[in-house]
Length: 267
Image 1 (spheres, rainbow, N blue to C red):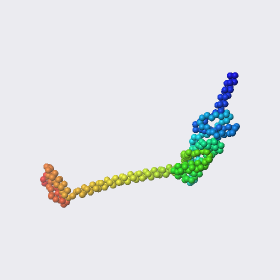
Image 2: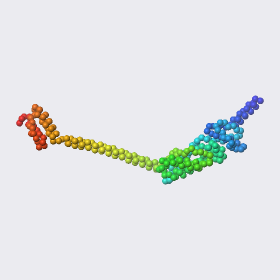
Image 3: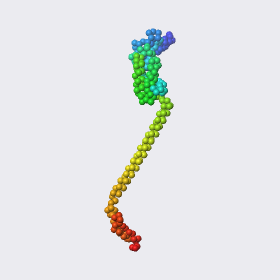
């Protein structure tokens, strides 16, 4: 009896274990009866334990935002092939999970979103020249988002955003850009050197002008009377010298006194 009771207990516990499903946070579920009425859409279960018969099960859907990334080769308006990486963030609409399961299924991104997303990305990039792709990235993202929302309308999904993650330009383009940047750097360096030379020349002109102005001031101050005055100062100093004999002729041709040195022997 005890053995039978133990076996029965184990069987009951096993049935209960098989007959429960755990719904994790961020996930919703619906009961599914493969041998009965199929999907039961009257109730959607959130996180927790869902009890059901062992031969039945549940269909789970994540209702969290999920990001899908694609590597797409696009052809720009000027016929340049550019590999790009784009991402779209979306999730199921919680109130429409039953319709999503019945009409689209759990592979909604692969079957519904991805074909439209990749096609729109190629078509929209084809409207832009490669040289404006980078500065126009925000506009391109908005346009892909706008058209994708329209394309999947009624598919029970909502889109949060579209992002251009990476643009890889061909080697010929990057080489041309590098050469252009090198030339621009060289031009900037030459402009800098020219400005330095101009500043140095300006400094030299200012110094020369200062010297010229100073000389003009000196020349303007050397009047005849001033020179005569300075000559008289020299005469006064010489007359006080005990070892030297000088004769002073009152006025020379330039109006200054002429000093004659007798050599100190009085002859």
